[in-house]
Image (cartoon, rainbow, N blue to C red; front, side, top):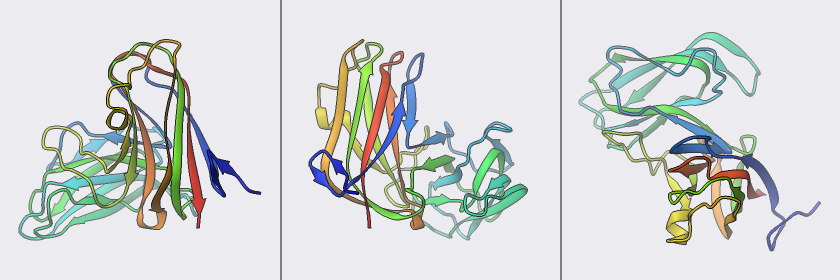
Length: 250
């Protein structure tokens, strides 16, 4: 069957519904999510991250401030879930190695997905400050694919002068370590950047942010994926929203 995304023939449309947060400023997500820790940590002593029994189904990631003299090994321990073997491992762990002298802004990610809270602890080597969190991205079932376009549409459910629709390309490069706040993921597109002025949400008004003619290669075998963020500075500006990705498989 041939699909049509806008005027692009041969593209498979993948649709996600979304709505913004009920109260106050913050970020909601579609096609995956990030759960960022507010500030960096050295994991010495051990810290716990996440909420017990919550079904995160996400990788643990680190963005380092730069390696020290000698390798740093950080151990992540918790309950893992395999999406390929469909296996829950109640007591599991994985080490992340920050190599000696690595550059600042280097991204690391566990190969395992975690459910529930995890502990993160320095095992050996010098202390290294890291941003960290959970990342869950849309990977198109683990294949290499190309993002050819996207279209977000919504009806405003409140007035907000600070809304944004953002697409991130989850990958190993393009991250920015932040000493006082969460790390910045690799940014693809932003409605505020593109529209410049006309990005406010108004109650009962419709909005749309779209791009076509793209050619963004996303290789899930390399840990890549897409995350869409719905940013707000007021109460519930996005209501009844849909995000559509135009995907070419091959």
